[in-house]
Length: 327
Image (cartoon, rainbow, N blue to C red; front, top):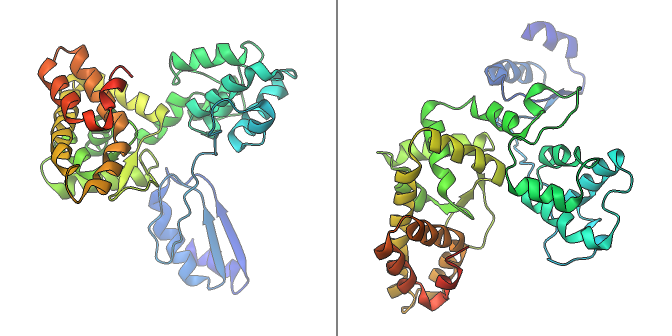
């Protein structure tokens, strides 16, 4: 087959466009052979995973930008990509949707809540003929995963967020699935040291290989933050999915306890570090993990781990994090 196609292309300049290859990665060697036999051929492929071919250039397509400032006007948020897509799809169904200035904050929060994911935005917009922006936001706060779009021309795996994430999840190995669900306890991202400790696998490279696979599958993403070390994160909908899996596996309490223990230790290490020459670096690190500290304190209080909550609060008093412990 490679020879037939290569002979057909010959020396001509050609572009072969291949869409959604994540479930056909075994075809990668075929593509590599075809490229080797067709010197002027270029392949543009979309996939949740890189093909790992020689000479491959990977371009990550992230979520759409969302409104950053709170309280922005309707006119201001309408020019932001995520909001533009949401309103375009919603108004195609309900022409007067989101026309009032009082609805601007709800609309902006909807696309922020959906992390700017185009499929999630389109699914949410499909309810514009029934729900107001405020009602839609309330429904999203009750759960993202089973919000379905009624669209007969979409594949079944794109009818709900749950189906779309489950499609990606199904390609993972058992080890990768374990790491994915355990990483769901983190909020606002995580560093490698914290993730390795909380996930609790034996062997650093075992954990790293699983993490690399999750990044390749776009279930975990590298965060671009001004922090001293690498940070990764999971978007809201995949994290909600993974949290459900963690609960089904009867691991939720043990992994939340491991998460709490790690951040108690980190807070106590930071207490001394903040008094020394490494203070600027530690301030950045602690600020990046505020969401995790809040989650750890809340878990400690909810579960009656009074000692842990007191250790966290007392260690972090310099950054006034205890006042956010109910978040």
